[in-house]
Length: 370
Image (tube, rainbow, N blue to C red):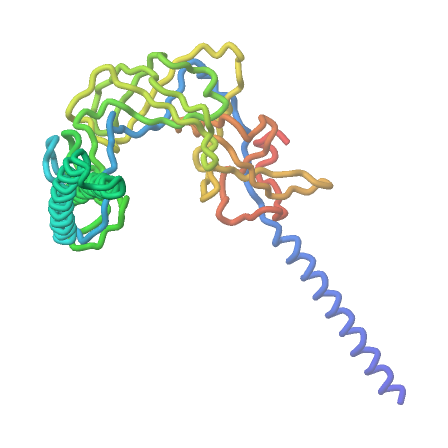
């Protein structure tokens, strides 16, 4: 019996020791599961007099064309990039239904004119009879009414014929300007509804670029300011330009304002859609602080650009997302116009391995001066 008790106690002791080791290992594993990350702090961008923003070249005049009537598209042989001249036939619909309508209204118009001529003859004869007292007042009144009704019908049918001919003319689509086909939206033999976009024509002269500026910068420029434009596909050439339009409404998606810059002298080598850089030079009288962070710290998704920062809670650090407005990418990182403070602890590596509210530790505290 004593031996049995001793054996039981030994087994119990071993079990407790094993359980304690397991708990210790679990605690060690939990502790080791907290990810170590490396951070940086935003730096002040000292270049405050000059800002460069990405832009897109666009035609001074772009027209999206559509038919005013519906039908089957039986002629449409254009391709993107094709050159067209003002007055060129671009596309046409099957005109047979509209030709038939014109023919029917023409016949009705001919009948109405014959009826009018007959009514006029009756009215003229009745007037003579009435003057000679061979027709009553009711006779002359009826003849006059029939004549007026015939005139009204001819007038109405004439307008209907005019409208039918106009509808027939709408089955052909002509180029309103000389230029290039920028986009085509349909294919031959499609059934086209009224107002369906067919093609987009761009003017031959491409002398504008569209650029989006953040709200922190929009009040530093004004219409007429001179700027410099360069194109990535045109080496070593700087184009003089000036601001021609500034939007008064902010884009809900990008939180930026559209600015149109007009080139003072364009060239045939500039094509619509080309990537460009616009350089703005201003006096920053407000001395606004522009920050910079490493380029790999800046991420973007469908909601825009953002960075991950560390938020301290009860002596622990947690991952948080911060949306930012960025400027030009320079050698030492992205300009940050809004969304960050100088004291923010910004992740500079391992962003793909973290998520919001994840607890982390800082692996480079000494380097960061913490």
